[in-house]
Image (tube, rainbow, N blue to C red; front, side, top):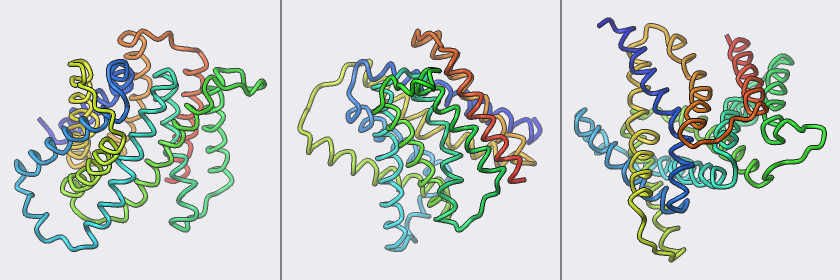
Length: 292
């Protein structure tokens, strides 16, 4: 198999797994609360990333780290997985899966806005138009198409979904500045993230034995959302002759996610969700085109 074919295979596998995450989160939250779900999923992700480090003979990379490297991982781990997934899962708990998942896709535009103060980048008028297009999609989804009434199905849920996108965009910017090897860096980030979540779990003091459905959902999220799928995506980028060839496949994910939500979760997909998603993706694609 040629390298580009391998790139497409790994990329499509990653996109397929990511497309199932919205359904997995929504179903899991029927059997387990947000904190306990994230605690177990994060633990599974730490184990998966550790095994990957061992298989790739990269454990040695952890030995030469400086104090500041651990400090950076402490900050990155606070943003992701702790704050990002805590806020995102809380949004899924309040909104329909189709709404929470789709609103989270606004993060590339928030990334552009954060790049202005944090990376000192300038954006053009056309970039602002692209951002407005995507935010129009956000309004369509969050108001379920009733923009003029400006009535939200769950104002807090919308704030949390967009807030999770903010934390992910901020994490992405800080992560870009961190030149350490990706897998070992992610492992340390998740170790710190697990520590934060464990502290919250112990402080809360609500110890309930999870159902097997909740445990199964946590394991699935830990493997296919937080751990293994990221490695698939890295391999796709490494094998591809041009990152754009596989990067554009990411835009399949939200539409596949809606199909899976419809038939697995059983939600009726609203027309406003599809239209709003098209607005969001159009704005992101326009922004990417302008960047080139």
